[in-house]
Length: 217
Length: 217
DNA sequence: TAAAGCAGGTTAATATATAAACACAATAAA
DNA sequence: TTTATTGTGTTTATATATTAACCTGCTTTA
Image (cartoon, rainbow over all chains, first blue to last red; front, side, top):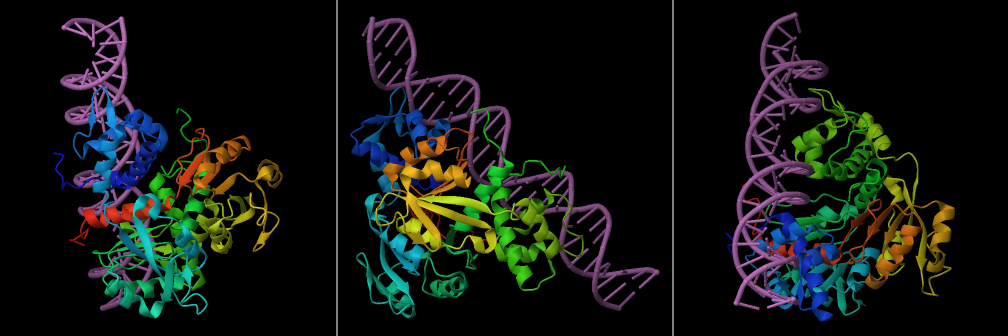
């Protein structure tokens, strides 16, 4: 138990970046220690869940004391591979793509959008911030030379699958898909969907059908 | 069983908009019937899960035939309240906010961003597409007069909680929160998070720690 | 230094979600 | 017709996740 290479539940893995960010915040504001209860209030996750999540990685805290912010932070930095810079490409420099290019992922993530791709002659050859935009014809070329295996997809829906087919051949491993299209990929490739319309619509559904949820909290 | 007002599992509710969109697509392309297997391939959800999801609403399909596209579509339109237009406000007309304003939620969602709010003098008074941008000082005033209870939050992180406190007083019921801040709200208000940095980081984590997932598929 | 109580780790209980299995009605084919 | 096939709706089984409960040991303070 608490084996280094043990598989952590997906739900836990998804919360790690959240914890990490708040620990960073605590560290910056000079806090030395923190309890699962404090963390819970800040990140809005049940304190028992937090302790459970942490304990998958072994005993990170001390009974009667809590967690040492610095220690936790260092540990998660390693766990989340925050030591080395992760390079990402973005395909489709439209409204949303441009917004993401301007979004500062580097700040406390050590992840950088290295290059952008588009087809529009106005955008190809330009720079958004310090990120160069190349023509989509050259996707394979640049992904290989820059050794990029993670792609943010913000192209129009009809272009999503054709582009994806090329990404598969270009040995991409992960796709963050902002298009409404459900991508067909081999099981070796991981796709995370962020479907804006679905998110909005499901929020509306919940509001109308689950009136004042958690009456008892 | 299959009671109209029965609470559907959250996981199911989140998939409904997805089903709905694809049914719309089928309808447009003139398809009359569809099986759970076909649907499964398109939306990338197990066919058994789809049948289960649908059966929460009663018997929508016919054995040996499948589902009638028109019937299903009509049913989900009602269920997802697609008959009446849902009005939404967007607060924070920055890069991301502007991108969302240009995003055509109306197309097959019957949801419209009615007004935007910002503090920048350049943006206040302008229009993005056909959406007017007002000053954030007037949030309460316009939300009330327009009877808007759903808000998309795309302000900078430090502004998130202060703005939210005002939204609570303005009787907002749902918030789609694009900021990294975890909002403190009473249990009567529903918040959905779309945390771009977390999404990207968790994708990276999965790639490094869950190598070629589903080897057996 | 001893007592009080805080707070982590862990086990057990509950809830939720997915996937598999199957019986049977409706269809299509022979 | 009759027979074979399809594909739903449902049940059962399995996997996953959350919440609560508890025990133990460290910290603190008197």
